[in-house]
Image (cartoon, rainbow, N blue to C red; front, side, top):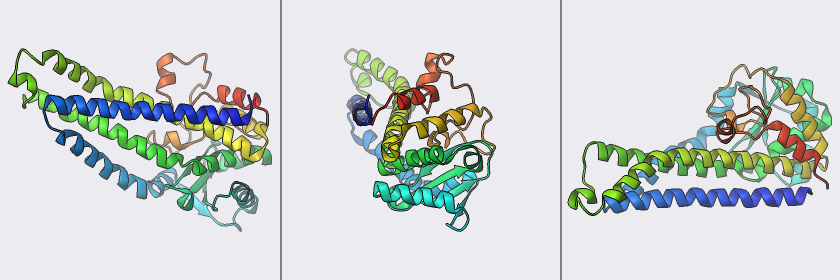
Length: 302
């Protein structure tokens, strides 16, 4: 498989997952709005989710960097790291991001920011110590690909949809619990089955929405791998980096599960062997197995 076909495949799959997500929101919203004969439920849910997401959209990067204990550097602080990032931004046509270092022995990195003009890249001290130049370049190219692909913006939109599904479901279940309105109360013989379907959907929809969100997150990792390899023209650099990262089993010292999905590898530690992972652990994982990513990278040709 070539780099180009890998990129195209991941883009198509991401689009299909997003369309599925939108269908879940529309379907659940229509069903519950129909039962209560009021589109206001859907409007209220979208409004609340938008407010919550906009706050995180404009201030989330600073919160994430502060939570990670990241310190911003300038060129004089680490000229080699700075020059690598600068060269990659020139090659990709992206603006220079702000660069941060996290004092942590675990090798890892992440990118954040709502668009390329407001992007930041953070790497751990452990990553800088363990990787050679081509491996570090591969990781930085991966993170810059997240920036160039507007992945942070995409995942914010996905988070809005997740919020909408959760709020709609919560409103409906609470209204049923308190016995508020509904077509089945106007006509006890006509809509019982539809209401039962709505209750089941309200319970399952948030779980399904979360699974789709995580699937999109995993697909964006595959896409960033392929785009990063395309940027450096050397897939083995990123493959070697991921191999070294996976060999470090301890979790990062200061990490929140809420921000774990941002990192190039799961910062919470754990066994990454896909053969030893259960089906449920795979579908609820924020990252695809590193061994699979390495296999795909090493199977690519330019």
